[in-house]
Length: 121
Ligand code: HEC
Image (cartoon, rainbow, N blue to C red; front, side, top):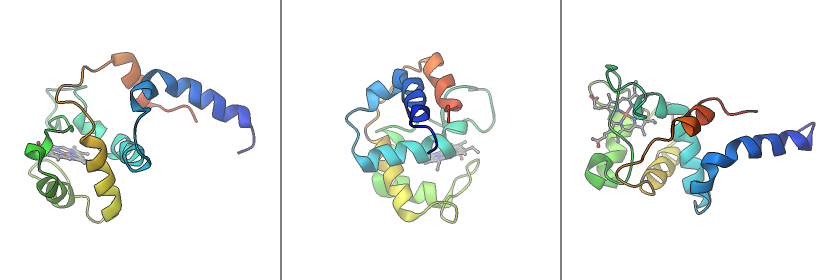
């Protein structure tokens, strides 16, 4: 990194929604990153009328069954693509580990979602 200050700017931008992530393990934090990059486009309630809108990913996803959730992520569903060729097995495990930290209903903070959608790099 050319400028250590750039990291600080990124951290400051990330602070409003990083607060809730402080207690994440490295595996969960990695899962959060993978989920943000690949899944939130369909799985955040930004556009519920959209045909690609998926149910919230949290501790209740796939009935709270980790094995079932992994199968769904690997093979996809009717309106959801499968990820077994796009994501590593361990990435999928990390996503599930992160999803299980999320409460059943996540009140979506619109400002934080916007910040999360375009991380300052
Ligand atoms: C193109 C939009 C789209 C993307 C991208 C997407 N999903 Fe989905 N997902 C859906 C839809 C829509 C459903 C609802 C089932 C259906 O109609 O196929 C779903 C269902 C699911 C379910 C089952 C939820 C339940 O409780 O039954 C899981 C788990 C899931 N997705 C995980 C993921 C993960 C993890 C990613 C990222 C790696 C992801 N999805 C990316 C659209 C998407």
